[in-house]
Length: 161
Picture (cartoon, rainbow, N blue to C red):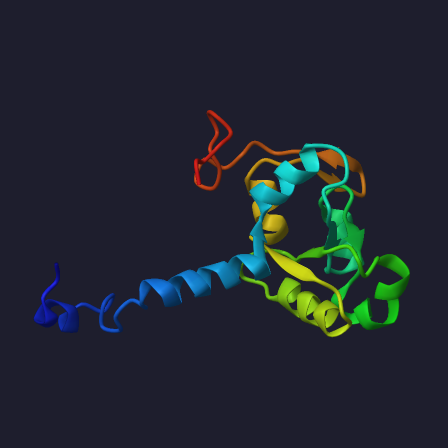
């Protein structure tokens, strides 16, 4: 148990944690808005209809450099104009952009939500897709890199989370 004096001096606990009920509501809501590359890859690798479509919101040059296999390419600036021709409004959309330092997937998710699509953002984006060792496609064809041991379990394939 941390004393009040200890908490005041500790920048981690300067603002105390939320109540368990508030924390549960927040994290439940977060999972309604986000997914991660491992879960998306697992659903896609299982075969059959995963129940969602993956959308790459980056430029054509970025798409050519590498993208998630089977993803739909729709740059954020073109969503309003082209989404209806590419996406089924009944199918949830998982957006991604470059990586955690880029909010392009968030902007794409917002644009889609404003058009009435159910949407989640794939945390980590294309960067973590590649860093976790999942296959991707480039202008030259399929590719795959060895998983980065700092981002993915390299021995048993499951992180346990």
